[in-house]
Image (cartoon, rainbow, N blue to C red; front, side, top):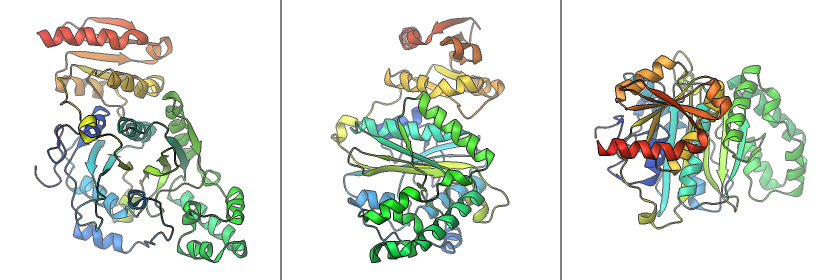
Length: 408
């Protein structure tokens, strides 16, 4: 595999049976080799103000997860703009981190994954990464996950939010302990992750400005759509108005996943403005997440079989169908039914073209009527025949169809 080459199928670093890769690919993320840091990108990022977090975390993996990720995100944006132009957009990728020459060292017996979708503003991309992260962590053995979400809006809204936070805590700095004052001077956002908050700091945080206060109408709509996807998936979430992954690049959605002890397992955000910050003429919409966890099960127990031959393409038409898409795909994954999809595409022509290019024998179609009725249309491509199946019978029927296809 050549450096930074995008592979449509296949393993990461020849780990053909990695369960994380299997789940990511099921949700449409293509495994790639871990990218290397570009020296020119490194110089551009060096001009950003990077402040080490003075707060110490309880486990090394969590400390690495919460560390700066600006250069990795800038590397992906640069590759997307300059080397991956021939790949159909948006681009959905899965890889291991840290990046080469990034200065980070892997923690033994710990898994580090990166998932990014670049080239779309659609809220479903944010939801795909949250759901994929959830599935990977649950497969690794985590049962009681907590989800925190926030929206900091565009770059201007995020800047106003930070400015208001600094002003607020500066007015109340005498209430902070000497250690907390040191953290505040380093970066105001680190106060929220301080492991040993004083009672005064906890009270100040309760009354501190919230990011959503500064959102534009576009920001509010985007966040509302993300929350609708999470609710449709049955994910219980908490809105944390102070959550921001990295102020150097985070825009709009920020989210974190923790275990039952409150330890950080995954953190992600949109980084739409980073492309412009490193010298491109326009913003490049993108969202990414880092997953970092100690595997609870024995490695051999979470490895997966190679992907079986796929014979179904899931096609969604309209916002009602898109909202139900992730729930349907997750059910099919749990029932080991291979399916392809393009959730970030809206037009029927684009989705049909993708299905035709893959030469898949069946297309699953959900439009507004099907979404309302709780059904799905199953069309056989060779005969163009089509029939309607209730969603509660979908997995059983697709398993039957797949057995027939496998015998041919």
